[in-house]
Length: 414
Image (cartoon, rainbow, N blue to C red; front, side):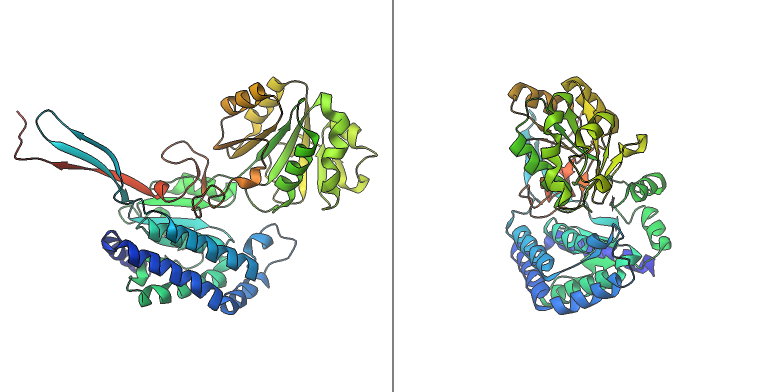
């Protein structure tokens, strides 16, 4: 069965580079319209998945679809439809002394496989970006979201048929580890594999895959409140980064604060109490918060408090005594996803962005913005934390490779 699915994806992928831009745009807009029209159907399938998961599970929020979230997904898809397609874009052009003309152009990978967990919105995002970049996509979602993903892919395929595009450009693999293993071993059938999910999932794919992999790593995100940080900015940024959506990879996990600003720590953390955020504080920050933050939400940090992606209303606080110590601490625990400094000192800000090795390095901005749509990419297929090929939010261009086109008038090489 899986062999048949992969074969159909390969055949469908050959048709996509020949599809004109108008048809691709029409298909994306048709699916976006169908999301609103068929929202009851999608929410019913999602409710069946939610019923099998405990609400206190950190994955519950990621699994949940709402009308508001579906509206946002549809808007993102329409945005992708308006973006210029990357395929065929000339990257480089030159003429050699013998008159031979070389042109380097963007081309799709072909068939992209995605292994992800309980995030049905990923199904829509991957489809839209892959279609716009002329790639077929094999979706291997988690079993927790199978009903949701099945309803999503059925809806997409129905709309593709109406617009004259092969429905097999997107396929949902069956749940279970066997399908994931087949995808990881599909040499010659899968051109690129992208895992999205927990550190455990990503590590498993990296270790087992025989096909090329781009890692979209877990997000252990820090915000450093510098000795010259603005308290109002810092309070807003910390609250937003931590509480906007705790289950996403760009959420704040650890606040690093300069010892000279510990007197401001209670005010910096005050709004967090309204969201029942548990703070795991080191010795110095605990002393500053004791009596100034709800005692039932204040815990002593342990070594495991740092370098941890919480995915919950919980974060750690680390006290440092210099800019260099802050950089050293973040370097030790970073996942190279998103890191932030809050400072009014331009030299420190520039130094922080130069010294911190992460896909996204912020100055006085919430890490919640690490997102393809927020970066103007329309949507994202994942946030790459590696350095080869792509880094940060992966949009349309990151889903292409290139080839050389050589034209001449009979030149031969001696």
